[in-house]
Image 1 (cartoon, rainbow over the protein chains, first blue to last red):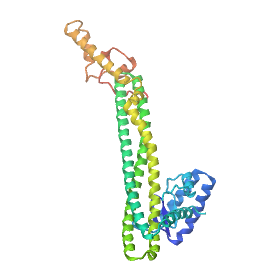
Image 2: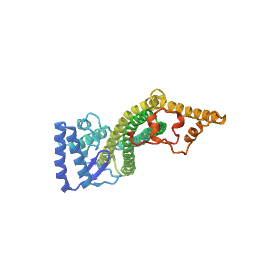
Image 3: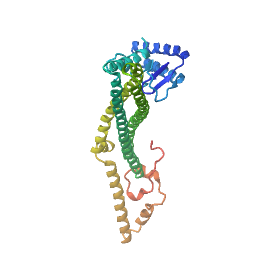
Length: 92
Length: 279
């Protein structure tokens, strides 16, 4: 499965590693719902670190779309909310 | 729904909307390629802009460092002539400048990180644009409009995702640099207007003026004493003059204690920190 970390690029994730990413993703979502920036930051970084750790970088010239996309590491909680709200934050 | 999945769907829906706008899918290829080239230009300009901001902050840090060094030197000289009050003032001002330098250093590091990120983003985008161009030519040469559709969708959604990502990265970098430039502009104005000099020496460069006055005063006094001795107006004075010559060991603590003692008793060579002066 191809995963993109925004601002960093795409990686390939083995099927066995998807479950743990989904668990971290749920924690991230809960953090956004709770509105705690510090928890959000910790969960976002935990998820990103895991993706970086288990992922294998795709070649730069690959044109594959990603199945999962993650916000950039320095994104604030509000920025991520805006991205998810499809309020036109993502250009294109 | 999952954050990762939702974001991915948002990107995909943007790509699909763009595809739907085109009558002939092959038109999409050329149109998209033009936009990719524009974005490449934009991201390169972004890298250059961030680099300019970074260099500006570097210059400011250097400017502040010179002021801090000057104040340290003044503090040392002030101590040398026994003016602990002046030395303390100089070091207080230096410390204020140093905390400003520390803030600028953080900004500098942020800009440098941003610059590296954008540089990498532009390299990735370049590789994908090259790859897209090849694919586009193959598709146009080989397939009819109907057949081409699926392949175009594949190539397009991949590059569209990259473009959305890079586009957002540029926006964020621009926002960050705009904030920093506003701050940097304020500091440039301060440096140019001499207001920082005032801050680093409020009442003009009064520390230097005081030191000059003290130093000059001593020279005058010494010269006077020397002249008097030559004219034989008091041989007893000669010892005092010699005690004040450079290279002689005086009694350093005496100068500090007596403050504005008569110049011949404060040896000019004594200029470094004294024990117990709290520095």
